[in-house]
Amino acid sequence: MRRRPDVLAPWLTVDERLNAQIDAAFSAVAAAFPYFEDEAILFPPRGHCIAALARQCLIHLLVHTFHLPKKHIASLGNARLAKVQSSCRMVEAHRHNPRFAAWFDRLASDAKAAFDRLEADLG
Image (cartoon, rainbow, N blue to C red; front, side):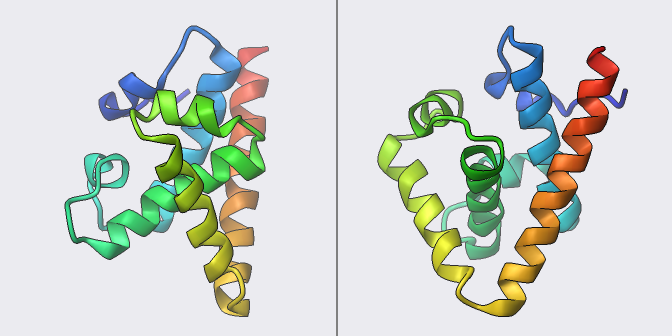
């Protein structure tokens, strides 16, 4: 199994299945936004809209693809619940664009496939 980025440490828990979901979602987003350092995805620089979109995509994947509670994501990501809710709303608003929706569906599919591989490694 590949090494998780150190920047994910604050998001990780003792639950290895949850960690695999976080890792899978993060890996999919990092692959979709390869021009960002890992830190910029989790902690977007102020005013950097594309890095903020990457984080919004990560949060949306965790909530809607892996069905993690928004309150749980807020506590893991050290964010207010309102920020998590806003991230999900923003991605949903972008999904009205067919090109974005198709791209995001591939991103979600990649995250699911990565999780399936990680879960198989957990045994």
